Image (cartoon, rainbow over all chains, first blue to last red; front, side):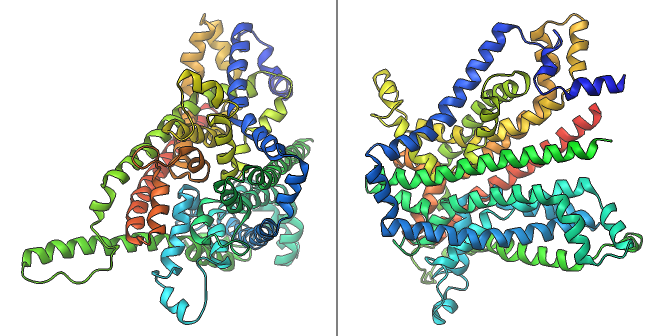
Length: 297
Length: 301
C-alpha cells in the first residue's frame, strides 16, 4: 500500500492532482485560474523584463554599444565586478563558518544567532547604507580619526564594499544551515573515527555534501552584490568614473534623460539576472537529481 | 552542559563560532547599534531642552543645526505622510500578492501548461533583477506615453509619478515571497484530505474553502508578512516610478536619503529608527507565523 502511494506521488507534479476527480478542478475553473495567474505574471514580471531590452535597442545597435564602451560605463562595470569579487568571497567564508558552528555543535542562544544572521534582510537598503555613514562618515564615530589619518571610507570604494557585504550577508549561510542541519553529523564523525584530519574531513565529506547549496547561495549573493542600489547609493557619493557602480550609473543616465544609454547598461544587469535564474534552476535540478539518487536503494 | 561537551568530536567549534560572532558583530551588530545610539543622543537633546527650559534662565547650550527633538522629526507632516504611504502601499501590495501569488502557486503546482518551467523559474525575477533596473522598466511601461500608460491615460488612470506607481513597484518586488512560501506547502498537501472531503459529499468549492485554504493560512500570512517587510524598506524600484512629490508620493526611505543629502544626520537617524523598530516587530511576527506553520505541518504528519 505504501509503495503504491509512493509510486503515485513520484508522477511528475501536476499529474498527481489530475488523476482523481476529488483534486481536479472543473475545466472552466482551471482555465480561469490559469488566465488570471499567467496574466498577472505577464503583466508584472514579463513585461518589465521585455521593456528593458526593447528600450535598450530602441535607438539601434550603434548607440547601444556606444553606451557600454563609454569610459564612465566601463569604469562602472569594473567597479561592480571588483565589489562583487570582494564581497562574495567574504560572505562565502562567513557562511560556511557560521553554518558549521550552528549545525555541527550544540550551544545556547543558537536560535538567536540564526535570527541575527538573517537581520540584514529585514533592514531597508537605505538604512544599511546609513549605518556605515553613522560609523565612518564625517560626522560619524570614527570620522574625525579617519580624516586625521587620511583614510576615506564613505564616498569611496571601502564604503561601497561594506554596504554590499552588509546587504548580502545572510545569503550563503541561510542556504547552508537547513541543508547541513538535515544532513547531521554522522558522516563527519565517521571520517574522524577512521583517522581523517579535520581538513580532510571537510574537503572529502562536508564540501561534496553541500556543494550545490553553496553554489546556490553564491549565485544569489553575487546577483544582489552586483545589483544593490539603495545601500550603495547612500555611501557612494556618486563620483563618476570613481565610485559609480552599474546600478548607480543607470540612475545617473536616466536622470539625465539619456534613456537609451540607461537601458543599455540596465540590459547588462537584466542579462545578469537571467543568467542567475538559469543557473539557479540548473542547481535546483541537479540537487534534486542528487537527492533522488541518494534515496534509491 | 558537560554532557554536551563530551559529545563534541568534530573540530573547529571555537574557530567557526568565534569567527561567526566577530564578523557578525563587525558587519551587522555594531553598525546597526550606531543608529540606536545616535537616536538616544537625540532624545537626550530633547530631554535637555525640556530640562533646561524648566530652569528657565540658563541659556540653551549651542547645538549644531541638525539636532532636534526626536518626536518633532518623526511626526512632522512630510515624514508622517511618507510613513502612511510606505506602510499603506506595502500592506495593500502584500494583500494583492497574497491573492495573485496564491493563484500563481496553485497554477504551478496543480496544472500543467506549456512553458511552466520557465514561468516557475521567472517567478524569482524580482529577487535577481537589480531594483534600479526594475524601477526604470516599470516607469517606461506606465509613463504617459509608455506601453501600458498610453492605454490607461484615456481612462483617467495615472500610474507613474503617483502613489499608484508606488503600489505597482511594491507588487512587483513582493510577488515571489508569497509564491515561494505557498508553493512548497501546496506541494506537500495530502491529496487524501481532498478525497475524503469529496467522498463525504463536499463540492469542489466547499473543499477549497473548508479544507485547502485553512491549511494554507499560515503560509499565506508568512508570505504576506515577508512581502510587506521587503516593501516597507524598498527604495530602488520605487523612486523612479513614484515621482517623489513631497506629501504625496514620497516614501520613507527617500526621506532618509533627502535628509542625508542635506547633512541632517540626526533627522535621518530618527526616521530610520522608527522604520527599524517596525521592521523588527514584523520580523517577530514572521517568526511566530513560521513556527505556527511548522507546528501545523508537523501535526499533519
